Each structure stands twice: as structure tokens, then as C-alpha cells.
Length: 85
Image 1 (cartoon, one colour):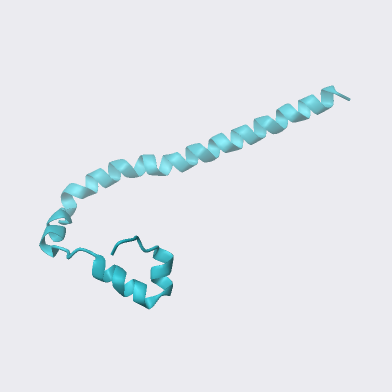
Image 2 (cartoon, one colour; image 1 turned 45 degrees about the vertical axis):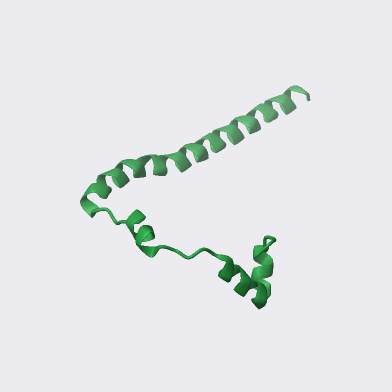
């Protein structure tokens, strides 16, 4: 093909979809499977366990920072409003 086909057009037009599929290179499935080998569960489990704690703490830290900033911002604005009366 000379020009790129937009994904939206390939979804709507069956002829363009077939042209886009025909233009794709042939996959070497042996190479794909060699890259995506499944590791044994025993070696992958400790890495997941170590990574899981920061994954759980990050949303809590962001929520705590948001809570503190909103609370302190409200407190500062209340003090400013009371001082201007």
C-alpha cells in the first residue's frame, strides 16, 4: 500500500480492513513464542511480592497528600476569611 490506513476507517470499511490485513507482514510464531516464555512460578512469586507493596502504598500516599492539601487549603482560606471580617 502506498498510504497509511487509519484504524477508524479499517473498522468501518471491510475492503480497507482486508487491505490492511493483507499488508501486514507474516508473523514468525516460533520467534514470538520464544520471546513470551512463561517463567516458573517459584522465581516469579518473590518478585511480585516485593513489587506489590509499593503498588499498594502509592495510591495511599497520593490519597493522603490530596487529603492533607485540601484540608490545609480549607484551613488557610478559612483563616484568611476570618481575618478579613
